[in-house]
Length: 332
Image (cartoon, rainbow, N blue to C red; front, side):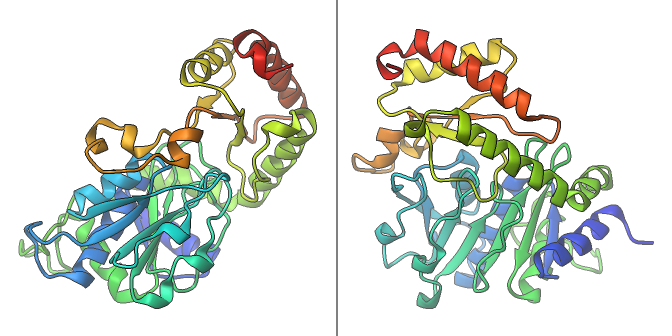
């Protein structure tokens, strides 16, 4: 009998056109295991003494950098462009691995990542459900957290270019057990299995992706009509939330703006903070960057299949009223 997590692997593989899928417990686990499989291609050291190098965006979710740390990789942070996507021109030539993260519903420029150089590319697809990974990508990773377009309560997925790498990932997600379960373990395995309960929640959302995605596109279009033009980022191709950038907003204004929107029942959030601002990474040398300049200017507004256009009207009206109080100098 096919288990729910196996059915999810099958259907998600059909959805993206790649059968080499591995269901795991979270998006972070997906990134971690992808990094571990990449690590095994570079070194046979299992102790962590050898540390392959990895390029990670400076402007991203902290899970990306933490996954690399858990895989004992040496991180080099790469600055973002004004559109918040990683600046591929700044990726050092000596990187073993590149983690290409697609931010806020848009794709970074995969043509510049350098698949042809021999370095391994891991794509973080958590915020671009519906997009297809680059055909030469080593591993692509998704999150099915409850605020994503394809969602459950929690869960993640990895798709590998090669079936052999998917087989290793399936061992790593189960503490390194092989198919014999004889207690000889593949090194560096963790407990990252997806439960059938979580898979059962994700499957209906996957099957309803077309309708959910279409609704979010319509809601995004409504936001575009209602919001000030100068606050808009590039149009989201695969929207799951709606990001805006208010030039000149500082950290305290950003925090107050989001807090006041939350108090009005609006699920707004602050944008990502630069990795060099995180306590665990403040020792990593990063020059003055776009990420540190832009990080306080971004917030995002909600999108969900339960919303309609009247909700976007209410949200934008509330946002503008709050903004006139919190950032009056930026709303004239």
